[in-house]
Amino acid sequence: MQKRIKTFIFILACSPFLIQCATKDDIQVLNYRIRDLNKKVEDMKANTVGEMRKRQADSSGQLDDLHRDMLELKSQLEETAHLNRRLQEQNKELELNYQNQTKEQNAQFETRLAELNTEVEQQRSQVKNLQDARLLEAERKAAAAAKAAEAARLRAQRASARSAGDDAIFIRADRKKVIYKNASSATPVRTAAVSSSRTAATPAPAPAQKAAPPKQSSSTDYQAQGQAKFDAGKYQAAFDLFQKHIDKNGSGSKTLQARYMMGECLYKQQAYDQAILQYQKIVSSYPGHPMTSKAMFRQAMSFEQLTEKGTAKLLYETIISSYGSSPEAVKAKKKLSQL
Image (cartoon, rainbow, N blue to C red; front, side, top):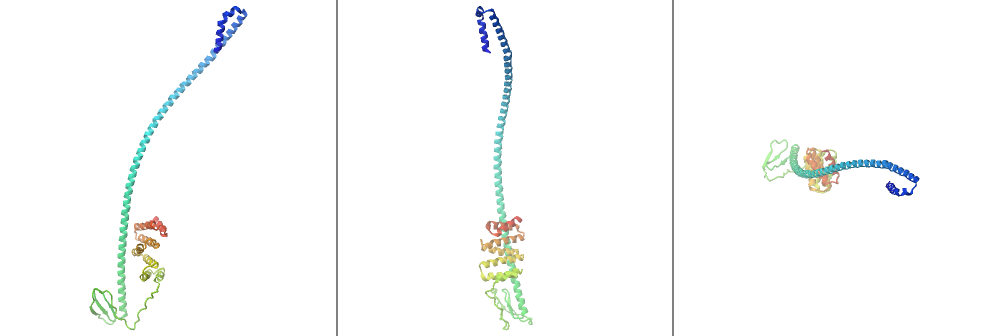
């Protein structure tokens, strides 16, 4: 467009010189061309400049929109940055609160754990004291029962001697010796006093016509006899036979089994206190032996029967911790789940 304008100006500038040498027709043609050129220039101004102005206006509007968008984005960015700063401050505050709460909870937990450990130790001590008291009480009852059994045996011997009609002599440490005659004699014959330090009885000579009872064979198997009595449900007789086996053999695996069976006889007779004492002899004398876990398990069951569930629970836990590979440990776990 500028090139055409420059050409038009150049022609106008040169027109005075051309007029002198140009003809009239040429001048007319030139005028036509000039008018045509002017028309094109006007058309170009009307079309191109208007369109450019329109485009410029559109561009200006777009720039304004972009400027507004940029301002809005800038505002949003500033708001976001402000929110981020607030969130960071809140995160720091929350983290500090969490650390303080964690420290406080840990301190409370450690304090509570120490209190629980103290309570557990106190309970263990109480359980042990209770167990010791139960054992002492069981020992006292067993001693009383043994004393009563011995007194009953002596009464039975006296009654047997009276019914036999033979002369019999009974000596007591705090009494005088008394000789009982036959049943027809109404008055007993008293002899001199016996010293209180004498404890063995001196029997009278046996009548010649009465043969002495046969001695028990040293080869008698009290263990087998006791087991047979136990299987037959005669627990007291079985207990006596097992005791004879222990008195005869002293120690050994069979003796340990006999001791355990004595506890079983007492357990079957519901003499749980005395059964605990029998089992305790195995626990105390044979630690680590497979029979010990069985005896301890039966002790726990005996305490459970005596409604001493705390002591029973402690024994079950001891079996699990000390005899974890034994069959009784499996049974103890099952028992603990039921308590």
